[in-house]
Image 1 (cartoon, rainbow, N blue to C red):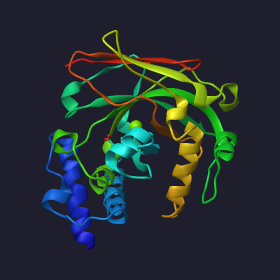
Image 2: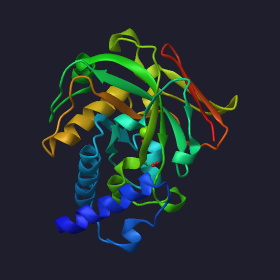
Image 3: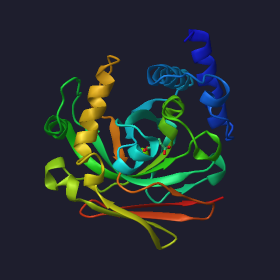
Length: 262
Ligand code: 0L1
Ligand code: MG
């Protein structure tokens, strides 16, 4: 794909995000033959545009890590995107619903790295050794595409629907609990909406992070000390509305909540 078209598509998706409106899938209207590799190049341009605006990367994230989501998209591999400095909120925050198109929430486990990790060939055990601590997090995803519907290349180009993340403050060392066994519940306005365990994330969340490092290695990238890495959804993603309070609880890891204020 020509560099100018690539940049134009990244700008198109960024404009939709910044001005909070949905758009038709780029594979429907602009690039029907878009491949996964080309989609990651559009995502890279979108990341570079954000960096040029002065935003900083908090860390890459894994998406489509559950078997259910992969089956739904008919894919065998997860995808990645990037979380930026302006997307992060503390637990207990009030978040403006007006800044988002059609947000959904999912409960995740985040890894804060104590050292750089570079693939290929990285294992879950190496990820755990390189991890300084673990925190619970609620990711708010918000596809820029109409009706939250897309193909795999569409969603990769759209930075894996990255939008916001609410990060908890109860930190644990990676060896303090078996992350595969961490049970998680997600409630909206006090009503249980979804539940799962860490094993829903590719068998073990550290395995998802190892896969992320090995995927990044293909384009010469790595994970950096201090980055916060979302490993993927433990629960299904649930649509949220203005006025909702979202609460998630992880066995042994604590709880996180936030509210949509308008
Ligand atoms: O973080 C995620 O798992 C989202 C990945 C993109 C797919 C979606 O928007 O549902
Ligand atoms: Mg996610």
